[in-house]
Image (tube, rainbow, N blue to C red; front, side):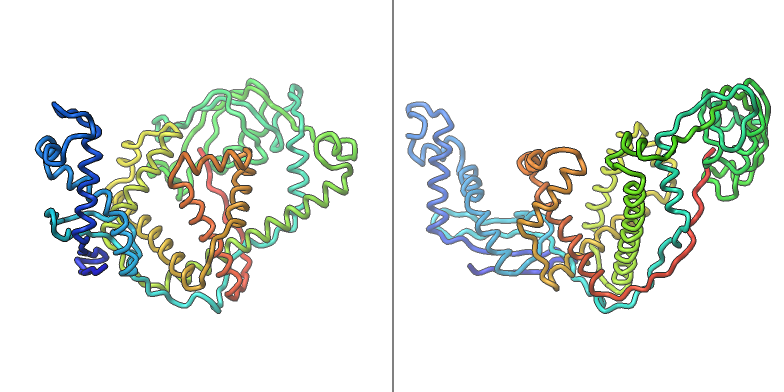
Length: 440
């Protein structure tokens, strides 16, 4: 099949090809026959009217249109294959000439993936930041396990201390005005593990049940609400309950009762293995991210506006669905983002597209394949994650046409990241973890 290819603009190409007259005539006759089987024409049984009668009844254009629909998939696919196009949109027919007894000429346009100028992606020397190893990680994990099974006893004969959990009412004001979201009834707070404003939890210690008192705090300079940054505030407190946590005794009997292990030693060994595995995973993920960022920074690609617009629209739909699930209002969220909302969405869309193009480019250069074993492994992972059988996951193939493509892309992404991790040199640099953000 002969085709003519023209670059229209950016990554938009136009292709013209011809369909032989003999094949077009056969397709036209078949289309007329199919149409006649679904229409009523006076004087004829369905499917028995001559072609000329069908043409007068429904019009030649309708028959040609249906004939084209039956022929185009094969020819479009062949035109894309012959021209080695890596398409990213469905072909759009822009023009055709269809006269009975003549070759049919069809013109369509389609967007292709933009060219990626890939920088070096293997043999790189990359420094990777990881959290400094916590010498107390084992003790924290073991205490955390015990805390999960702790009991809480009401305290009636002493003031609260900084290891208690308290239940209280509070109302906050700043510069004489109520703080939005700064009031609650029956709020429970662990005084030893609080993310509240610095000084808030500390001032709840040393008080008795039913005490009513004020505490003074100052919002941090980096607080998320502009009106409250660095501002002094007063919180009126009513202490309702004081509870002390009682940890269970760590022995074999307790371990057997609450876990799959038989002894304390088995439990401790599992905790150590878990900590080691977590640290190994953190190192690998941070390394993969650092390597990929290095590759992104050295890669050049011109992303057409049309691709950004489609990806931005997709991102907005994702955000809308997520906010609807959380019971949040989309319009209020957009308004709160100000004039930078659309530009930020565009930036996120561009970054996502560039990442995808780079992964695709690398996967082709190193000839990454996806086989049946990869699918089985991924489906098993998903089944375990969602707590369903593998057969239930497989059903999604039939219910969602994009499911197979999505799974394939996930597998390719993981294989590319593994390849990059194995083929680059990583130097780990330990850093202290950043402090957690505070709450009201």
